[in-house]
Length: 135
Image (cartoon, rainbow, N blue to C red; front, side, top):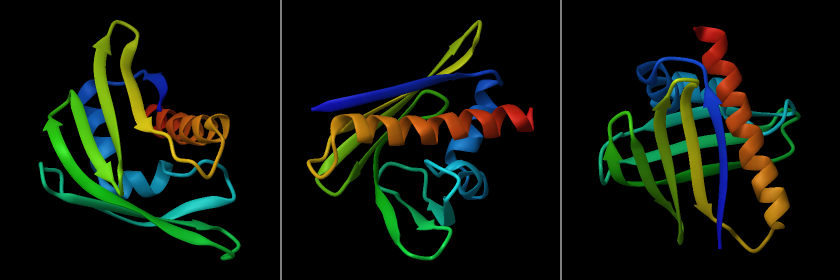
């Protein structure tokens, strides 16, 4: 099953792309709630390149690495990647309202579809706030 989340960011496409693909920016926006944060991020933005984000609870009680391999990159338009046995696609579409960022990913079986959608949407909402605060 595929799950989709999206937002429209009021900023130029180059800035939206940069914030989505730069480790220093990723560490600022990549969390679903205020009690989590990303403590490290790496990006090798090319097909076959790897990425990783270390996500941790702020109280130190839990953490995990979200990592994978880029399978397709079309600058300022598309990022596709595999993580474990799952895949995701991030599409960037310029519009008069801003840049629509649409993330479609394979669901997993541990959490409900609603929990997964809500978590990924919360991260995408943080991304939007981060980029728009920088403009």
